[in-house]
Image (tube, rainbow, N blue to C red; front, side):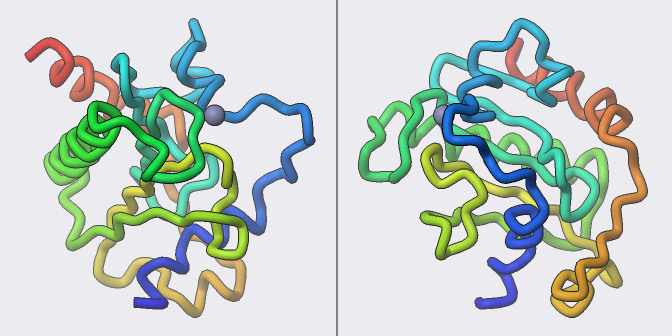
Amino acid sequence: MEVLFTPWRYSYLTSPKSETNAECIFCTAAKTGNPRETLTLYRSAEALVMLNRYPYTNGHLMVAPIAHQARLFDSTDASLRALIRLTAEAQRILSDVYHPDGFNVGMNFGQIAGAGIADHYHMHIVPRWAGDSNFMTVTARTRLVPEDLGVTFDKLQPYFKKTANE
Ligand SMILES: [Zn+2]
C-alpha cells in the first residue's frame, strides 16, 4: 500500500512552493476562461478534472471539487457524488485512449501525507503500464514523461466534452 500512494510525492517535491497569497490551482481552474492554459479538461457545477502539470505518467489526471475544501467530510453529498462520478469517467476515458495495464487512484490529505496542495483536496488518477517507472525511479527523481502536456490535453478533451453532452 505504501508504494501505491508514493508516486505523487514526487510532484510535491518538485512543484514550485506555493506562495502564501498565490491562488489555489483548483480554484483558478474552477473559474478560468482559458481551460487549456490551466489544463482543465472538464468542469461541472460541482467538480472538475485537469491534467497534472507535473505528471507521474502520461494521462496523470486530478479530479477536484469546485468548492475549496481540505477534507472529504467538509463536502456536500452532491460534491462527493460528482467527484467519484468524474473519477469514474476519467478512468473510462483513460482506458479507452491509453489502454493502461492498471491505475493508481488515490488522495493525500495534509502535507505530511504527500499532498502538494493540502487546502483543496483532489483525487489523483495515474495510469500505469507494465515497465513504467517504479518506486525506485521515483525516489531517484527520474521521471518518464514522453508526451507533451498539450498533446495529452488535445487527445483527452474531446472525450470529456462528449461525456458532458451525453
Ligand atoms: Zn481551491
